[in-house]
Amino acid sequence: MQRSVESTQFTSLEFTGLLKYNGIQISMDGKGSWRDNVFVERLWKSVKYEEVYLHAYDSVCDAKQGLEKYFMFYNQNRPHTALDDKTPNEFYFDNLPTMQKAG
Image: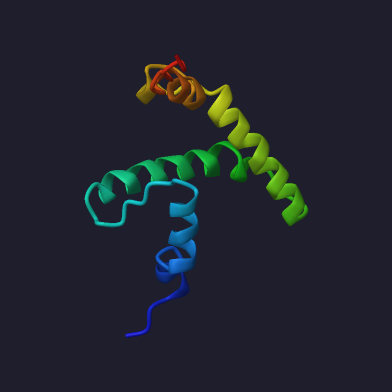
């Protein structure tokens, strides 16, 4: 059975090695994967209905700029009920562990 590029490109040593090198945690054991999928599906539904379907992009460059603008709005200005009406940025930075001061 031949594996598609989509199913292997994110498990390649080149890709996973880059993630590990940058301290990014990788979850590919299947545990919690349905929850990850729910999050991704909700995100892309928002992207499609709040940005993509509302604009007729003239070029890939225009689409890229529109999506960059949307994700800035989504993360910095759009409150999310699942995050107690905080933006993703507010929620993330409010929940960072406090750094210990060098003493």
